[in-house]
Amino acid sequence: MNAVTAGGVRMSYGDVQVLNSVDFTVATGEVSCIIGPSGSGKSTFLRCMNGLEPVMGGSLEVLGEQVGYSLHDGKYHPWSPKEYAAFRTRIGMVFQRFNLFAHQTALENVACAPVHVLGRNPAQARASAMETLDRVGLADHAHKRPHQLSGGQQQRVAIARALAMNPTLMLFDEPTSALDPELVDEVLEVMKELARDGMTMVVVTHEIGFAREVGDTLTFFADGAAVEQGTPAELLTNPRNPRTKTFLAAVL
Image (cartoon, rainbow, N blue to C red):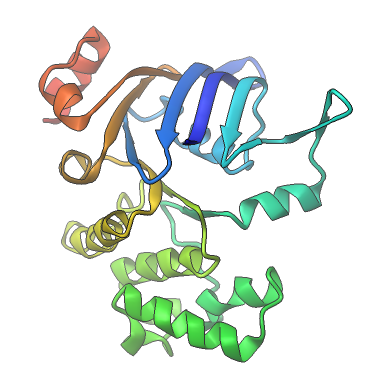
């Protein structure tokens, strides 16, 4: 079963075509990495998967649901805000910037959504949040606010916050791009552990080494389209598309 199936997905901002007939699949339990130049539509496509950007054409099915629409009486009807919110509880998303609540501790950041979105008991949510912070190696920093943490620690809190919702699918939008080089590995190690645990993940990344080591599939995006998809070994060592070859020659 596929966790994500996209067929001919299109999306634009006014006259600017951002996604141009994207075809893409991710199997359940798979780690799918996406690479490509800036402005190629990678992040927009990731946001479409979570319903943060509208799909304007084609079909995008995520976790068995047609994103943005429900089928009733033979017709598709747009989702309500409540339906979007319910859908997003099944998906964890980690952004380039950490987007933590500055006035809350790491523990409060992680426990917040389970209490206010899922309606969990606050004490139980805090206990679960501590376990999740321990999972990302930050139990000793639970009492600290974001300004007291390094960039790598903040991003690990952001991952813990996403995991606190027990998602079926995790989306990562260049999670290490805002970090100093020496902090990148601590975030990648957490992501590798998630992969070893069988989490279905879609990762937009510039970390080619991570894609090579952890990815089950690798997709190259350019000009709003998924130009080429295959295993990391296939795509990195023997790309077929000239655009892919040009990009990899510049970054490898």
